[in-house]
Image (tube, rainbow, N blue to C red; front, side, top):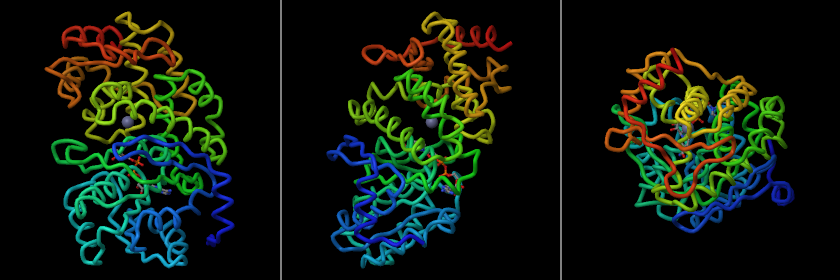
Length: 380
Ligand SMILES: NC(=O)c1ccc[n+]([C@@H]2O[C@H](COP(=O)([O-])OP(=O)(O)OC[C@H]3O[C@@H](n4cnc5c(N)ncnc54)[C@H](O)[C@@H]3O)[C@@H](O)[C@H]2O)c1
Ligand SMILES: [Zn+2]
């Protein structure tokens, strides 16, 4: 149990790094560091004038962490309404959103409450969507508990649920008012999931910051061990990079496209695997493949794909997948991707490690026939 006292809070404030992320409603701090969890009572008190909040979590995270998170809130006189749902992407669904919203209504929460999300990306997307829609929007404090949720899902304000037809088809932009990323949560996370989140960190380095990419690879062992200082550095750097991209493009028109690097191929192989392939693995394979396609088309400096392969390998993430060998099928799936415009695949223009075209044409259109041809040559 961790007691919360003003001194714990003060110490956490001193220890944590802070990155301010611009959002449609102004901006919000992402506080990162060992002890960030101690700042939750103050964050909730600031967001909810009624002193009431709902803590939304999945059952697995709740079992491990709910008591330790709720107790300090209650000690500060905050009324906490727990609202849990079974873990897993399959539950990022409208029926669950409806049930959680019912929980808030039954508890009599009003506009002056706030929602706390305690969990990974699934919980963040779900709790954020509940917060976005409950009473037309209440404030939302995010406590990410997976690497991916800290590194990627805490920036951008995207919330929502899946539909049988596709992922994230129903949702809203609703930025949190504060994010508290405490590496302690990663200590209970499955090592495979710990590693997976770093695929997106590698992506941030590959598209924007070669030095960061190299630091990640050199620090992979410490990061995978969960060393709090290393985790803090990675989360701060990734959040800063993603925030820089997103803040110039709050409703996803142009610049954000570069964050899609690796994802055109990744979405196709995820679909091909019936979503049995973890997202981080698909992104790792996708980044290496897209760098190779870029090299083949003369867009990407040669040798880049080998660097990307080395970076993902440092985290024991894969760079190959059997789906790559089925060029026609893969190309068809890529054309069907929701980010595809008028039936032509657009791939992010990676120039070299750490350099993407960020102004003007950030993507390059590849006609389906050329794509099939290139895939056949690269992945016979
Ligand atoms: N909003 C965004 O910008 C954004 C960005 C990237 C991904 N996402 C979404 O994030 C989701 C994937 O997130 P994820 O990989 O964090 O998955 P997740 O939330 O499903 O978590 C993975 C598993 O780990 C468990 N878990 C979480 N934290 C734990 C902890 N500290 N200790 C032990 N177990 C823990 C969960 O119960 C779950 O079973 C996807 O739905 C994706 O669409 C959203
Ligand atoms: Zn991703």
